[in-house]
Image 1 (spheres, chains in turn blue, purple):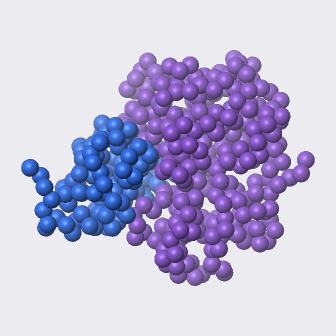
Image 2 (image 1 turned 90 degrees about the vertical axis):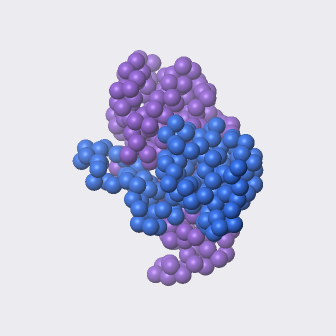
Length: 131
Length: 300
């Protein structure tokens, strides 16, 4: 059975600190996952990522889920325990980005795409997904 | 009619791919006696709210803009310390940073230390509003009395998306069951079409590197609006507009039977109902083109 191991405390505490969220309150109801618009692009459901952070499992950082979250806050509105799951996703992304990781490279886009995309799309994308 | 002067923060996209949003807003507001005054200089809104708790740096951009509004009031350029936004991201980012500044003394101190090149510190007195909220303050009756060409018979599905309403408590209306856009559309004489995906995210900035996934989300939203009988979808965000509008070309690659559905800014419908001309309605900038439908309905 999965249980919390004391050596995972540092990671769990870092997520709590960066997100400002009381992740221990989650009781795995799954409301966040049921309302999430991006689950079909995710490897782990948002509720599962929250469970991983409760257990202090650093594998959460390797999850595709944290990168396809759109921060639309639908989960925040639905969570009966008052957790802003989007803040937790941001905390996890932040921990990876601060190691100089870029999820998106604008060089991969064609000149036509760059011309056509609204500035708000490009700037918010870069703010969320690049170091 | 007395004119009120209100500060207006445009943001990057209103000056580039969403000029139709701005043109229709400025012209319609004028008809209601509202003069929207742009600050002499402004910078990026901050784009997205800094969610990581130790992220202080990203509050500086939004707060600099709010400082400009305080200056405008001090110089007598506007009547009060309200600032009106149009883009949902600008609205959310400016509003949330403003709140952090008011609530968190420690963060406020750190931000102020990094804004020492400003003439005065930000006083925290600005109120961030979306245009829809300013219209609601004016009263829907005031809007409806200005209507010269009722949108009667036009079935409009209002689409909210994410950041106008969420997180809970920071948005412009009830996060689960908003009515503000419906109220406006009714004041313009339109027939409001409710549909289940009006609060669902359009995929947002993932349109840059995950266009198939975004097209799939947009398809689900538009398809539901169509099934509910909508002629047109109305919205209030230039990123939603791109994902639900121009991205229809991507949708058709995956769902060839989709066809198309016009999407417009709520302000364009307001300009139309106020009887304003092409320069104000600016429908020519929308993809897909809503004009054939509006012509068919005798509205243009």
